[in-house]
Image (cartoon, rainbow, N blue to C red):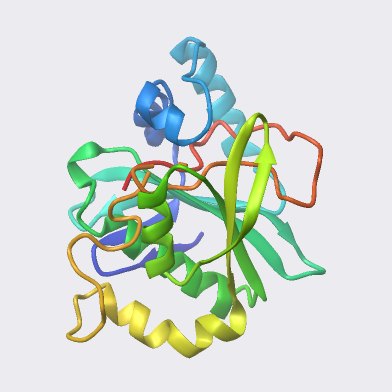
Length: 229
């Protein structure tokens, strides 16, 4: 069991109670568009069964977190997946599905908190993500968390921007970025911080696009991978 505490959010393991909201968010056309996906067209009963199966048999090399606000309200998801234990890298995804929590730095808090865990506890060398090329709001949000654009990637009839954070760069700036979650003076963050305005591929979010190195499409998790923040 993993629980990560930020300034405004808590990242905790997924649970069956998340299914209803996840289904609603994945059926939302706007959130699906930000994730370069189609809205769900299956029944809730079918989705719930798949959700239960994924809880029982998690995808290797991934960890999905439910994102709760400080008062315990479930507001979205944050995750890493495609973890490569040889290269020591993984892809990050986020979605803030509850619109009441968009544009208030919840996404920034979630992303920086997860990045700190990935670099300090899992000891990764690189964390990357894909965001739709037209989603400049998302790109600005991720840049505040330390991501840098690498190149454009064409996948599944969509153009994405591959962004990454390298371990050395994170270690140099992590103290400042983590302090910014609490609105520390001079931190450079504000109420509209990183994924605080983004969505997935969210009004600052990351799409679950295949890694640039892999030409093969992959099965998508029933858990949302990215969305508004």
